[in-house]
Image (cartoon, rainbow, N blue to C red; front, side):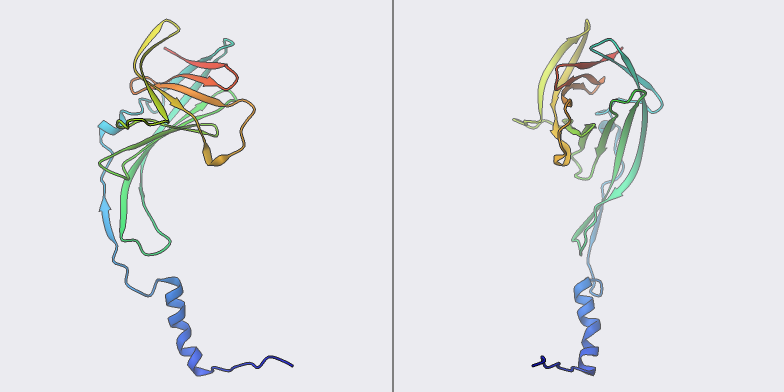
Length: 203
């Protein structure tokens, strides 16, 4: 026995646009408040010290020196929603890419003021991310305040030891970045690999 087909006719045709509007949430007014966080101030940009167009050198523990070229720029972004948002935030993002002249890894840094007056600052080396403290968080497991270290007879002060976090749960490489030493004045000072090898900033 075949199922009976119910014919709604003109009645259904009248409701199709209404149903479509509800599904897409685009036919109803959306009262979104735009919050403009303005440009990133110089006090935020100093968390990453690299200068656009400059070259920075790191020496591997086996003696090989690798050069990284810096590209730095700022652009605008805004928060968005798939549906109606109560607030939309306009903010700035400053990015720095250190591109190596040897096939190992590049280094990427990002600063933004999406959550102004607080700033978010982070780094990525290969598949691994690092949180760069832009303000003090007591008991944060992602970094450790070291204060000062000596690397290749050079002293560095106000130093953080940043601990790696695997990005997006990607598969681990056989050798990966385990941690690094970082300061606002010098940037990355020393990169420590999972197999004990390291890369040290050359001054």
